[in-house]
Length: 144
Image (tube, rainbow, N blue to C red; front, top):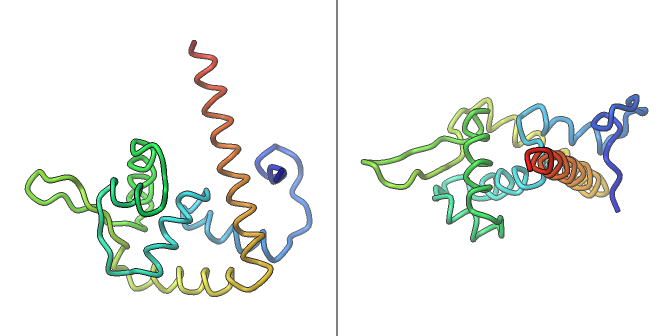
């Protein structure tokens, strides 16, 4: 089981570690959980791909599609993705064409992929994802 990072649980921040520092670079970009990381990582590796919500859900195993749609829209708001909806068709999403943003992604991915940092980045983002799911579940329980 992965512990929720102290910064999310309200506890004091521990001494910085390289993996956590690299993960925080992604969070600063708006890639604040594992699903968003997987979407951006896929597009980083395939920068010319543009696809619908169903495409990303199928390609990356993200379920349910409504959740994938919300993730894509959040990434549009951050400026990481562009949304195109030609003539009322289903929206398609692709990586932003901003040179400065792409350079930041190159820098962040190149730094984070160094072993063992990559595993630490994934663990940090997975813990953030778990925290978000638990918080969402708690909110739903309060409503009912």
